[in-house]
Amino acid sequence: MAPKIEDYALIGDCATAALISRDGSIDWLCWPRFDSGACFARLLGTPENGRWLLGAADPDAKITRIYRDRTLTLETRIETKDGIAIVQDFMPTKISGSHIVRLVCGIEGKVQFKTELVVRFDYGSIVPWMRHHDDDGSLHAVAGPDRLILRTPIELKPDGRTHVAAFDVAKGEIVDFVLTYAPSFEDPPPRVIDPYVALENTERNWRAWSQNLDGAGRWSEAVFRSLLTLRALIYQPTGAIVAAPTTSLPELAGGSRNWDYRFCWLRDATFTLFALMNAGCENEAKKWRTWLIRAVGGDAAQVQILYGLGGERRTAETILPWLQGYANSQPVRIGNAAAGQLQLDIYGEVLDALYQSRKHGLAPDGNDWMVQLELLKHLETIWQEPDQGIWEPRSGPQHFTYSKVMVWVAFDRAVKSIEEFGLEGPLDHFRDLRARIHAEVCAKAFDPELGTFTQSYGSKQLDASLLLVTLVGFLPPDDKRIRNTIEAIERELVQDGFVLRYRSDLGSDGLPAGEGAFLACSFWLVDNLVLLGRREEALAMFERLLGFCNDLGLLSEEYDVRGQCLTGNFPQAFSHIALVNSAYNLARGGKPAEQRSGHSGSKEANPLLKH
Image 1: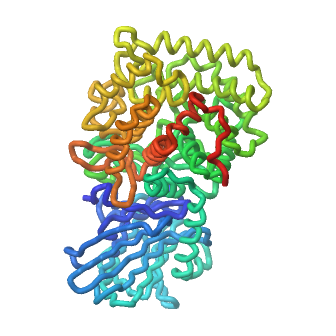
Image 2: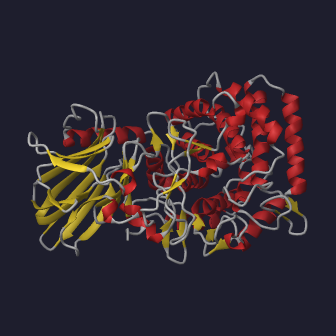
Image 3: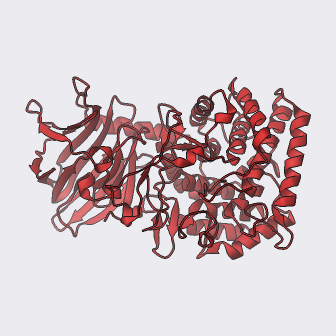
């Protein structure tokens, strides 16, 4: 069985990412892109499905880990009775080809190491042809279109279908390993890189990117780590933002809620964009906006909720029966059938993101307003239809409250774009639609008997997405209906200090009951408490949530209270976005939330995007 999710670290090169366990095993890596087939898939299976172990031979070694300051270089300190060594793991950025570099550095005495390399292409299913090249001693793994090349002074020898070696590192010694991906048909193969130059340049690149980030007071380090993680999840060639670098990590161990998150959701990406803009990341915001316009294409009726990293639309969902699943959680899925769902909220998310980009001073794109008008024209024809909503249930469409609120947001931001930026459009018509939608939501989504808004029209269920109603500006935080809804969520959806998305045990989502607490929802409650003036409660809750980051500051999608462990895909962009936004709300007196919602000073010029 794979280690706990919180025992993993992330390294990446802004094209793909690897997960490394505390004992030094790379258990997940899709090469050359986030959504490529995995060549190391132990995370969802066994070591026979591929991994690369590089760790202490002593099972009792003391292991501690950090990221080197403002970088994605993982530094693992290993202490044994005989000595101390440090392993530095990273993926070089801004370099030809894609590589993993592992440097084993002797600090004191002598430390014994072992390494085991098991390459299995196509998610652990394909055994490659392994051979040494005598001219340079490199080890090549080849199958179909894929090739991995290992270059190191340590000779690995075959042991069945595994290649192994044992070696010592003494004080002052450094042993380097460089693993390179290349298409198998490329001739000649990629040239050798200098791992030490690559380390220096890569760390310089990460620090240069992070030096202009805006802090969040005493939570700045947590914010910087989250922003670095988000940056690592941006596919550099296109600007797309993946929800997570993994697939099928279960929402609850042993369950079937296992989804592929290696795609770009319009909803997730706009939340990310907002966090990045508030942090001062103008270039990333521009690249995502350009990606969005390309992905949407020329027919608003064909807009999907998620796309591939290049804007691909085909994301067929497939089950991989040869993988046993993390913690025996099946099925293991690749692809995501949710791409075919209607989720009305994405129109509001996109319109809001593009409005906020103008409001933040991002140089306008000549095409984005035309795209928005086409989206609005289509939305006007479908907004009264039921949809699958923010949580993508597989129980059939409903008139979800959050979806209708975000329809209102779409037309509200269109009105504001025309009023504030002088753009051309049917202003009076958009105003009338905005008022009509607002009135319908207040009439049909509010339950007078409960005194709260509910998950969908006519429902009696609560839903954590209702915490976003005031954050997007639909109603002010001091509205009695909003206060009652927030208080009801605190009573009925807060469990062991976490906010549940909804009550999955009621069986309303078409899936077997059971999931962890969705971490972003708890941060949304923090934001609401800030806007309600309950600052001390917000502070206490936020500090508690920070305590669930792993030792490297990383969060997954959910937290399993009973098992006391992180669960779901990891690291999860949505969780880190919510952390960043809550930290800024606390450090800046609620300003980011106010800016988005339009309440309390949102019309002031935004001073945050200044780099």
